[in-house]
Amino acid sequence: MSEEKTLLAYRLITGPDDSSFCERISTALAEGYVLHGGPAVTFDGTNVICAQAIILPKAVATSDAAVSSAVDELDSNLVFDGDGIA
Image (cartoon, rainbow, N blue to C red; front, side, top):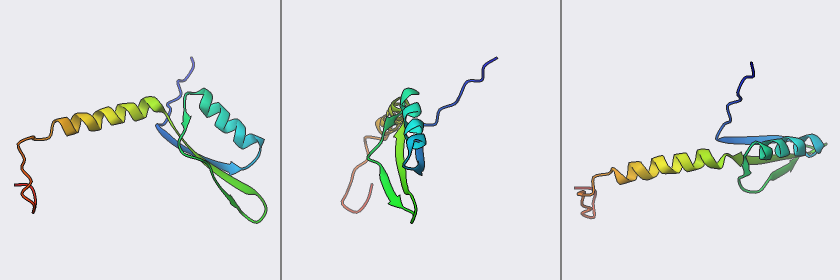
C-alpha cells in the first residue's frame, strides 16, 4: 500500500548552493510547486547558502477563493462615517 504524500501550500527550501539544492527545487517543481519570488543567498564564511520559497498554485487559489467569499459575505449596509464603522 503506497502512502500518499501531503503537500504543503508553502515551503522554504534552504541549503548550500550545490547540486543537491537544485535537485530539491527540481523535485518540488515536478510535484507542482512554483517559485515564489527570487532566491535569497548569503555566505556563511565557507559556503553560499540559498533559500527559495515555493508555493502550490492550487492551494493559493483555494485560499484566495475563501478570502473572496468572506469579503462577499460582509454586511454591505455598513457605512463609513469618517471615524469608524457606524
